[in-house]
Length: 106
Image (cartoon, rainbow, N blue to C red; front, side, top):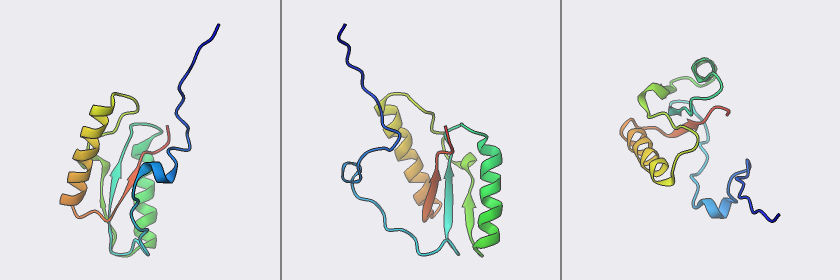
């Protein structure tokens, strides 16, 4: 029996295959951070924890909660994923996000 299976690596794509990446922020102080949730691993609890810790450490930080972005579900077809990614990018730009926290386990 000869069977070929395709697998997705949990490591993601090699950096070159992913395209250009944004420069890292020097600090989160005074920045606006968006949350993008994949509906896994108690995001409501985890994002509340992240918000509290970020506000303690970085004065002036603004958080755009995941409830203001579409939820990104695991799976689905590539066209739907691209459509949601574009919606997220548009909302992040509109809200002035400097960075996004994406996912949350799985």
